[in-house]
Image 1: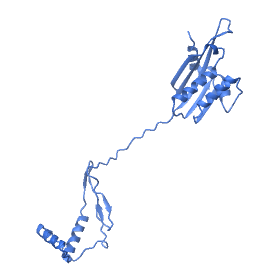
Image 2 (image 1 turned 90 degrees about the vertical axis):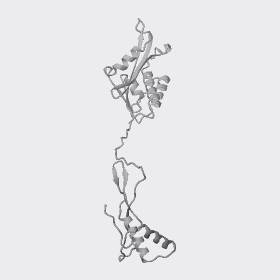
Image 3 (image 1 turned 30 degrees about the vertical axis):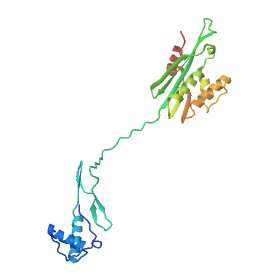
Amino acid sequence: MPVEIDHEAAEFDTDADPQPLDSHRASTFAQRLRAGEPDDELRSLATTARLSRAATPQTTGTASGSQAMPVRSSRGCAKPVPPATGAFFSLRPQTVVVTLPPSLTVAFDASVLYAADNATPVSGAIGFVIREGREPVVERSRAVLQGDVADEGVDRALQAASRVVADRFDRVASVHVRGDADVVIQTVDPDHPATPSGAVVRRRVTAIRDHLADVPTVSYRAVDGGRNSRAHHLARTGHRE
């Protein structure tokens, strides 16, 4: 690599005839310098030594070979500056893994079994499934309390599912609620509100919205029973024996 020298900044005698500096001459010149006896020969020799160092690139060994790294000095000369001893420079690309928050689909349903008269409820259960894409990540089914059997409890199933979303997932990009109970969907959806039938339903609707309040995007859509078959199956299996 060529070395650029600023001839205006470099102070040297162009008429000087630089000669090799053997040990005897070096000792003599050192004594004269310490004695404070500078002369043209000393100045010429010192300048020649400076230029010789500037014109000789220094290299340092690395894992990929030796290479000098020139920098510009304050006097205008390019001087190679080696890196720290043992330094290793890697150009290998680094891989950064970014995990995006999931998009979830919630399907829910409830089931009530009746006595032989087909009028007296004897058992109630709820079920729901939470999917990430097409893959189920949570499936639950359970019986309801005996005193609540008369309440069909579809909104109770959605309340339980929304609580799991809030408790299990730190961050969620979106939640898409799907169910075949049109009245429940319309009641919970803030964009298409319906009047809750009573105080119990109002409390459940409030709880569902609170559980999903931190999710950036929440959508509600009623679907036919065939597209809600898994949640319906989970609800039926939740009945006590």
